[in-house]
Length: 112
Image (cartoon, rainbow, N blue to C red; front, side):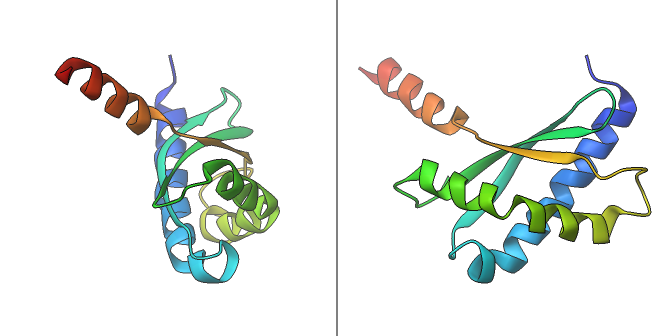
């Protein structure tokens, strides 16, 4: 169960990361369309698990590696935006959100 503070910080990080990915997609992330689907904060607010969805990408693991390679830059950019609102900028851990793929598989199974 997450606290109210964890949820507020997670929502803030989700919104700001979405903007960062949208604005810098062509320069930093090879034009990949990246959607932040979920952010989960650790209880001490030191780690943010960021779940990403990639649209129209065949190799999702390759796209995730690209995002992870830019994690330090992304964290610095995030710090410039939310630095006055949080005490410390959390470490960003990126994961692929495969819930849409799971939903498609369940949908296909139900239809057949």
